[in-house]
Length: 151
Image 1 (cartoon, one colour):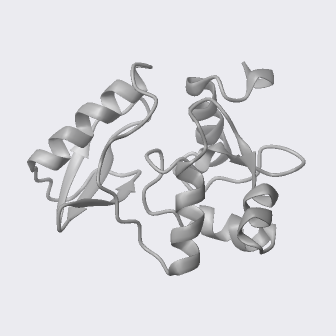
Image 2 (spheres, rainbow, N blue to C red):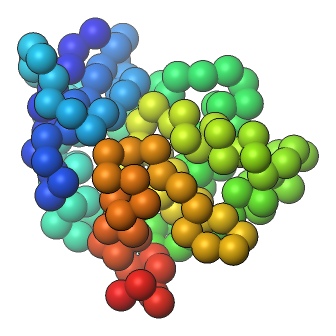
């Protein structure tokens, strides 16, 4: 596995590649950063996203987790830039309940690229497992214009 350091408006991110796919984004600087063509492309796409010039990522992804986690990640990938959905709406689509969907969102190994920040609670913002917690989620939603009453 190779881990690159990528700059973001929220501080350094660690982005991991394994076997030709992005497998993780962490909210911390890697101990021993490396690089690869895929990680350079990821850095470019993330810079464009943070600059407001990119709305979708075109990267091979391999999020961690079981079949259910993969299904939730796939559902999150279908949420358009600037839009939101709820844990309950994803749960209904997958034939389950909101709580396991929320847990799966919290276990998303590739935040930002797999947009768990676009998933809200039925009665408000919900949680966020990334560095900065709910404030980071709000910042990402504001970046996308996806939560208008926060702007």
